Structure formats: C-alpha cells, structure tokens
Image (cartoon, rainbow, N blue to C red):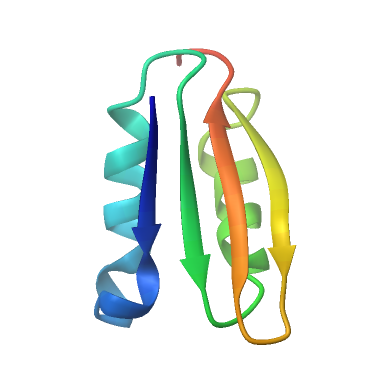
Length: 77
C-alpha cells in the first residue's frame, strides 16, 4: 500500500503530526509519499530521532518546484 500526502494543503503546524500518524498506521513494507514545496529535511531528522530503524527515506523528486519523498516502514517499533 502506498499513500500520497500533499503537505502543501495542510496547515504547517499540523503537517508533521499528520505525517507521523499516517506513518504509524502503515504495515511493515508499506509506504507513504509526501509532496512538498521545499526539501523536507527537518522531517527526516525528526524521523531519525523519533522512529530510528523503522523507516527508509527515498527522494523521488528533488525540486526546484516540488519535492516528493517516499517514506517506507521497514520495521515496527
């Protein structure tokens, strides 16, 4: 299963919480793709801190107008 979240449509203060909620609902092997108007590198560091060893992070598109990142669940907590 793969879900696409266009975070540009989500209020900025709610974005990370919604992304983590969607990620936590994934089964191992499933993924979600986020679409953003800038590099979501701060989100990557938050994943490293809060979900170490549970995810993979793959850039599908790197700007300049749009970034797409696939975040897959590789293990359960």
